[in-house]
Image 1 (spheres, rainbow, N blue to C red):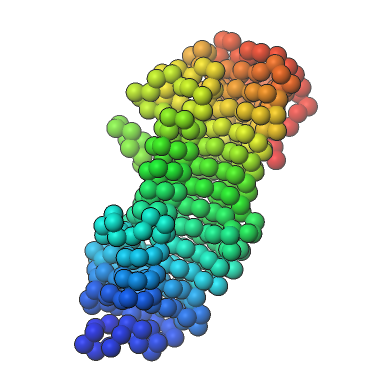
Image 2: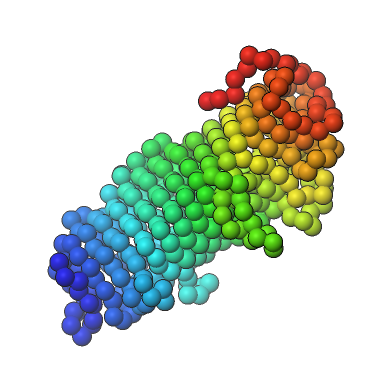
Length: 394
């Protein structure tokens, strides 16, 4: 099908342009303002080229997708926005692909505080693939709410800024999947990623939160992969997996439950002006569940890390298995790398750790005799068991 160049002088409405095509492209030649949503039906396969123009709805979601829609803006000058509600709604089996688009509120008072850029509900097998773009929300970027299942979001790049939680991966199905291969993710007042159920896989990207946990895990399975972060001389992100937090009372990664597997990347807390780390100022804090640290670097920029530990296990039902990770701040043995509290259990097969603090109340560290590097005073506390038969793999 040949593309339709949408022009109000030729087409009465953009709905008529979409209705005239089952499969093909629509290229805007001017701004589009609607009162109600523009709908992409389940039988449609449409490419929408903004061509530097804006599109919005004044009283509804801007785009409703039940079929396939690909959005691009080769001129990178247009804005897709809504004045009242979420910008894009995926229903049933909607399939959205974005080459590049800019989505943001035109005014902080225009979009209500409870609106998302993407709302996926009730999705069953929905797909969202984002290659690039600039996304800003006064509330959330993406919300898989409780009605979503068997759906996949893949992010290959782009910039994502939210005043609330940037991405929420939840729903009523463990088959929901969020895959992040790159991009910059920032939350002003909450977590960059909220992992509730399903699978979260991070293969690269820059994640940061100044006032909360950067990644908040309550259930499901989370994989963190990728190379260690590469930064420029001013500390700006260049490449790799970089998860950073500086919350005054929040760890960078907070695991309330579920399973976490770290195979690579850099997880950091604090900044160069930080005082001694206090309670909860950790690179990783584990309350419950299971964590495998097969690689990656956990570090702190606080002036000193004492009782808090860079990695902290708080309770008896928290288990960690370390098989190659680096948990340290410089080479100073006075900084605590790993802290086990109140019955937490650690299995340590290999790795590079500043110092291990073990609480004496039914806490155990099972440690192999070789493959572990640490400072001059490696362990403080009791319940240390050397056992060369232990394994630390999944």
